[in-house]
Length: 445
Image: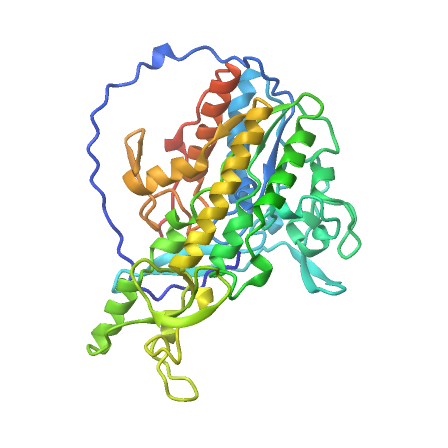
């Protein structure tokens, strides 16, 4: 996922008032920590950017230290969990790939973000035949228990050249791009482990969605559900082959995240109308029901504009004099819009993926964190914990980071607790929950 640029959009920071009527919890009734029927001696985490601790449009040391697997591991310590090793960036390269920092708000209340470009971990460039140049990140040579690789799909599980194309994966290996041949599946199972969490599969839908659908990013086409099912069955079968137990998570509904809910069609139209009151509609290049044919049409409130949409383009004429986004002959390109037909395709795929995840997990007796339902409920009703009123709003909600897709440390602690609750329920363990209040949301200047 690419790094966001400064936003020049009208963003309504909504303040939600939540009324809660609940009994005070009896903390004295908490059971003594117990591992139940699970063995947490060596816990590994399998997944993508969410698992790695990616936040604010980048992977950097602070995000890694607040990844949900590291939070889970720290809570497992009281029930026999061992040391949890992450491929952390060195202190001198602590900003990793770079990330976004909130530096203020303009007079209209729009956030101002700055790209952090110092103390990065890039060390060179590799030329991969048939692909192009790949910016390499500094190698990590220690033990690894968190195998989160930003960008990876379930589709890449057994693809041998993949590490050559992804510097986050390359940095975990002793060889260097373009000479890598280690598959992700072989890496994560290269050493014995007793317990795992798995959240692979998000990018098999998310890449299509954040790219505005297949009309723009054909390389990010939705993974075929049958292929997904075959690979997920292989993954879980391999992870459990030697008796390890674990927990899996379902794939969230992408339409619930701030990346798709912050910059809306009515908001952009209202902004344009302040300058040009005669404008009546926005025009987008939208898909038909199959997602293969695209044509201009008037945008509706049901079409989702991405958070990174460059509003400065609005109204700028093309070579024929037609204003951008305001005329069907110069519509907003599909990469900036997840239209209603594309949304339907994503939801169909995600529903199939999640049916597979639940079925395969159940066949092995694994715990399941239903992230789809959990995050959908937060979008609808918010989330109250430890006196904190949280929701899915951009910046003010406290859960999602500045890229509108990944989580804040507070958001990751909530996910950790959901995994822990599912693990405790399935295995009869009593891993203590993390204190969500101890983790921050967006850091304000």
